[in-house]
Image (tube, rainbow over all chains, first blue to last red; front, side):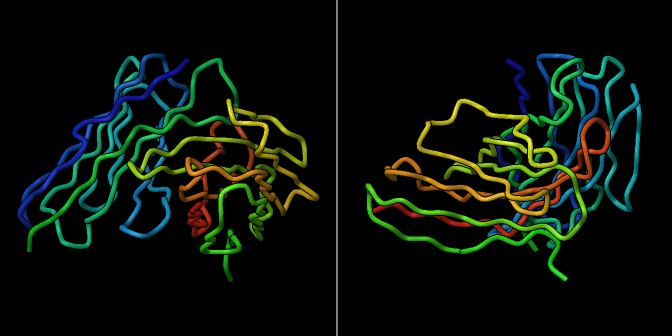
Length: 113
Length: 114
């Protein structure tokens, strides 16, 4: 079945440093989504990427979707303590179920003030 | 105001018991989901319903039975609870499928089986 690998598993940074998490799928995706889960909270939808090579920005967050639609990244510039949480990518399989998302295992980001 | 709500928030029970978790969404979405998040934070889909019809049924023990009385509600009943069922269970909804399946998650139900 489809697998979505996400690295790194953990990342600890000093406030102000940049952070990147990477996502790789074993199959071509129709779209990829990113979620953030604060400690003790629930996943919250951040963004969806659909087109090959797509780049989207949300303030300090930059999301990319690879040309082959099999990988994606989330980059945070100048991290803040409010960025703490686990970031998940979730892929929808191209040609597969129209509803099923396969989540990566997430990257836990901690920020030292 | 709450978009996706779940009850109860915490559930502590003994092995062998039967328990239910309820979920409701007021977003007008067509599709609802149950996810299990284990202690390592891995999110795994269990079931999905679209307009009360079961559309995703992953490899989940028969002890787990979802029920959708209408498209705004999706409940999860678990029979003969086991230690390994301890996890956080999230309900989620999405507008529909395809590129409109961004998930809106409920606050979660932390299930502890003793």
